[in-house]
Length: 129
Image (cartoon, rainbow, N blue to C red):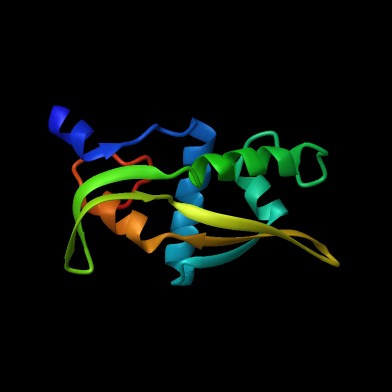
C-alpha cells in the first residue's frame, strides 16, 4: 500500500461527489463521448433530496463538481506511450449554461485522468472497470 501512496496523491472526494462522478463517467461511456451536456435536472436526479427547483440545487451541484475538478498529483505513469514522471490532472472541467428551458452543465472528462487511474494500482474513487 505504501508504494501506491507514493505513486499518487489523492484525497477521496465526498460520497456524493463519487456518486456523481460514477454517473457522469458511465453516461459518457453510454454516449461514447468525453463531452457531456447535462441538465441541472439530470444531475439532481442522481442525488438524494435534490430537485432543480430547489434554490440551493445549483450550489450543491457546483460544490460537487468543484470536488471532482480538483487536480490529483500522479507520478511515474505512461500515457500515449510516453513515460511521465509527474503530472497534476483532474477528472473533469465544467461550465454552467443557461437556455430558455433551463440550466445545463457542459462537462468535459479528462481522458488522461481516466487512463492513468486504470493503470495505477491505487483504488480510484470512480469505478473504471
